[in-house]
Length: 312
Image (cartoon, rainbow, N blue to C red; front, side, top):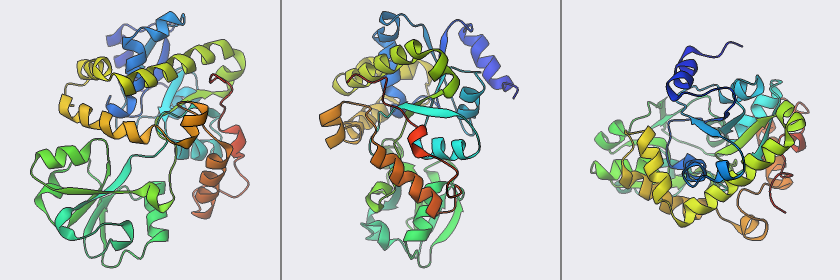
């Protein structure tokens, strides 16, 4: 696979040599990447002996393909995307899961009276039709009178129409919609049982095998970065603003408050930030098989993740 010209341009503009260790983000730098920026801002990667460059993503960024082909060393993705990629022969492995509860929500208007996902009816819903979570919702909910339209990435249609609902990340878009005068209610998709780990750090099987010391350094510094961000977000927020002027500081501050809840649970309390469990990966794989997203028997979920590089 040839590296996209946009990625080459980003690499050149940032002065990145192949001697640097690269982490490709799956979207424009925002709160869901803040722990990685915190690690960089606090020199945690440098203290571990690694020079790390964070590469901005965007719509359709081929993060997992770039990781698998060695164009970048690490990537940021979500757990369901990792399993889907592996079902297609892309040899990537998740090694850190900073966000334990997916921030994916369906955003509705307070005036709609809708307070749970099963109440969704008689409205327009903007959603990515091919997204696994969309498939899950359609299988689990009646969705009477719901008209589906493509998700355009903006809250403007939501703000303008009280009968409009949309997919969103609960750490950003609801705050933006509120700033524009709307009164959003966030319905977590995870409450319905679909809860892939989010913003997972991913590496190729080749790098995992040939450069385990590098993987260990990057994983542990990233974990420390997320811990630092949750306690003191200021440096990470400033670093994100420096590379993405389109995201306002109040949005990042809102995202931090939400991530305080989403990054921690009973698993992290006992095993540490970024931990992953076999039960979560097995359940997710079974859901994707049930939805027909991946063929039965095509993916061994135990090979899609490793916590060997996290502190014991």
